Amino acid sequence: MTLTHDPNQLEKVLTQALTSLWGTEDTSIVFYDLAALKTRINELKTAFPDTAHHAIAVKANPLVGILSYLKTLDVGVEAATLPELYLAQQCGYSEKKLVFDSPAKTVEELTYALKAGIHLNIDNLIEISRVAQLYERIKSSSTCGIRINPQVGTGKIKITSVAGEYSKFGVPIKQFRSELIKVFEDHQWLRAVHLHVGSQGCGMEMLVEGVKTIYDFAQEVNRHSSGNSRKISILDIGGGLPVSYRDSDPEWSFEKYYNRLVKLCPQLSEYQLITEFGRFIHAHNGWVASRVEYVKKEKDIETIITHIGADMFTRMCYFPDDWTHRITVADRFGRIKTDTAKRRYTIAGPLCFSGDILGKGIFLPQVQEGDYLILLDTGAYTLGMWSRHNSRQIPKVIGYHGKIAGIIKEKETLEEIYKFWS
Ligand code: LLP
Image (cartoon, rainbow, N blue to C red):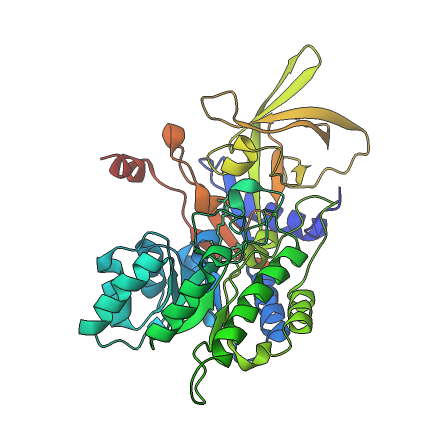
């Protein structure tokens, strides 16, 4: 296994945490590399034209400390719910930095976004009629787009693929091309097209093909628009760039992706681009260390019982064939174990069901009570998908920038759990 984090740095940060911020009540701690986040954002900005608006998907990592740090890097955010919009606004994002997507927007949410001048991506033709009615009575500076399902196929992971023949999201282009052309003729305020092909399981070729489908559609609408004004001036290409969670997964880059896009869509630069990356921005920046409470031996199976499981790693526990994380181990002082003689372990979390398993047949150097299991590449869609089953407390989150920068979020208290269920 190739570690996606420099082991020396992991060790440095973990040992520093263990001697300073790791309290006796902390059974697991989540770490986030802020310097790596800054590097990713720079890569994104360098790969795309300066005019692109990068709206980082809040759902991938909704921590206020991270959203606030992203704001200092001068990017925007994509919100898929009203609470995500609220989080962004509380972090100080101005309306023009926000993109609001959701397949279930209520009239109240649409009114709020239009009044605030937030960019909206409309999910379907019924929502178009709702927004048209609102435009009759609201003066809005919002730009609006419609989400199109480019129907380029389903990637390797079904439940996060949204561009198959059927999807609950967007308007399928094959069946509704002429209706889509008509909505652009009918509504002057509609200026953008939006798509998202899928998250993780879709390879770069599929993502590019999705964008190309939407680009061709925009070109067609614009060719038929009267006068000089282009009807569609904004292309929101969504997110979806896959991350390497296994050594066999390819490692993509924003640069490769953008180069591929311009090759297939030669006039792409004539559009204002919006991007909505989440996973590729965050995944490699995060990791979790969790204390080994017991190592149980039964016949030929050795089971590590640790303090993180299906509460934070929902996908990995419920869909183990599709999702995984690299795992390594450190001793009680935070030193990464490097012994070459490996043993096979089953790794189990703390929850009350037998599917709370982080992995079976995982080869690790010998593990003992008091060691720390380290799960890598956890910066996206882990804490953000926390499950309340068994009321486990959300762990402390520590940010570092070369060395530890501070606590991003304190461990959830028992009072907070009580309040949650009250
Ligand atoms: N834009 C839209 C409209 C989306 O639905 C998503 C992700 C993104 C952007 C960001 O995609 P990314 O670059 O992060 O792949 N682990 C989660 C993934 C669901 C993501 C859904 N949408 C899950 O298992 O549900």
